[in-house]
Amino acid sequence: MKTAVIVFPGSNCDRDMAVALEQVTGKAPAMVWHRESELPDGVDFIALPGGFSYGDYLRSGAMAARSPILRAVSDAAGRGVPVLGVCNGFQVLTEAQLLPGALMRNAGLNFVCRTVPLKVENSQSLFTASYNAGEEISIPVAHHDGNYFADAETLDRIEGEGRVAFRYTDGVNGSARDIAGVLNDTGNVLGMMPHPERAIDRAHGGTDGLRLFEAALGVLA
Amino acid sequence: MKVNVYVTLKPGVLDPQGKAIHHALEGLGFGGVADVRAGRFIELDVADGTSDADLDAMCAKLLANTVIENYRIERP
Image 1 (cartoon, rainbow over the protein chains, first blue to last red):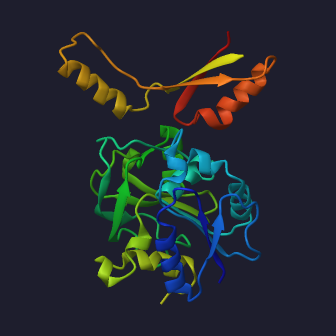
Image 2: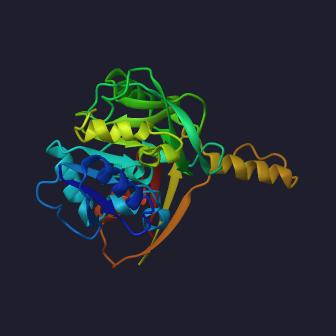
Image 3: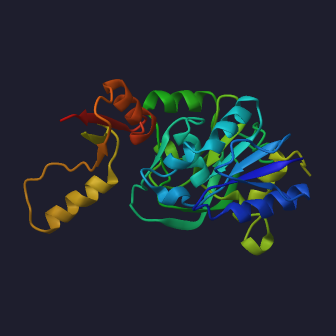
């Protein structure tokens, strides 16, 4: 299992993501700088970490989505390679149009930083197969721009196709229909605002995030 | 050649920043403000003869996120 973490200037959860991937696969991921135009050969899993890529200039994730490595990530996603975007990574995936919608300033205008309950809406995806449908899990969030927006038609479509992976159970940031995580139409790209890599050790206060990596990396217990 | 680009939220997209500005104006005693929408102004200095199509592509590909934003290009 060969994994990669994309690192942008301003990423700050890249090393946490690397720890999570190494903990589950036993092998350190390749850390791939945004200026690279190619991924390492044979990468089976790509993570876009949280942070403030390019200082959130223009819009969160906007610059990163146009960086050279994103073309390679997009090609890999098109070939079916699993891609996980967390927090800023989710923003990058929407800006790159690998996922529908956009992430706007939190409705309350505050940076929200706490562990929140999430409802698992889709337990069939490669990322969520270790959860039960409807199960409530706890994962930390830490973001200013997590207010998910899409037009009503798009929301109806992604809901109808089972592409809402996670939903907040109480209002966190004003997201449309409390959406916390979205899958692409082929199910191999997941973007989510909560940070599963911050819930992989009992010392973190919970291990609900670990189960996502175990499912996605094919090492289901 | 200076070109002005105005990026604004689409109608119907909630604008929490505009709302906060609105509240602050009311707090300062300015009545009669019905609504506030905040946007972004970008000034480009481009080569003379840059085509409308190129300017439009700049907006659509980067300057605006057309999922949530409209843009307007103003040439001199």
